Length: 191
Image 1 (spheres, rainbow, N blue to C red):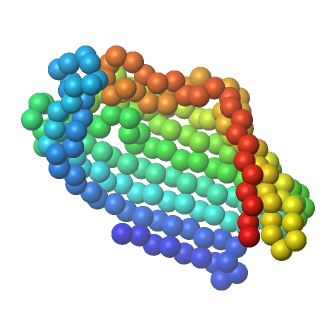
Image 2 (cartoon, rainbow, N blue to C red; image 1 turned 60 degrees about the horizontal axis):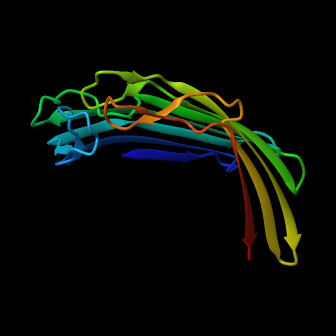
């Protein structure tokens, strides 16, 4: 269930969504085995929460986008003692904030932050992965080619080369580190 709003001048919009989902017979890593290749049926998982986003053309040049999600995901019925435990790799809180600046009709650049809260590393909830904040950046140049547009874009992810844990293998055997600073280029041709 949700609500979507937009300002009369269409410069600002927001979305607010509430959700309550139940899934049965979900596979999860077997907490009684160290090998993450062994899985069991988890019985039932309940997911509930709120998602909110707000976007706005603050000035003719500045566009902002903010998001937030509160998510509570738990095992509600289980065959192996997981009932009440949080599902692994799901943070309760996460959000982002992005801003882009349109320098002229052809060139824009942006900066954004992604924040992810602490989350269980395994279905037993025996350890928590720490939360993190990652900074990303982008720049794009658009060139008209006749009636069409060609956009070259460069994205830099993890701009500050922060060390963080992206997720776990679903067991207590290990965690997967987040990617170090990386650059991604793309070309888009619109016709």
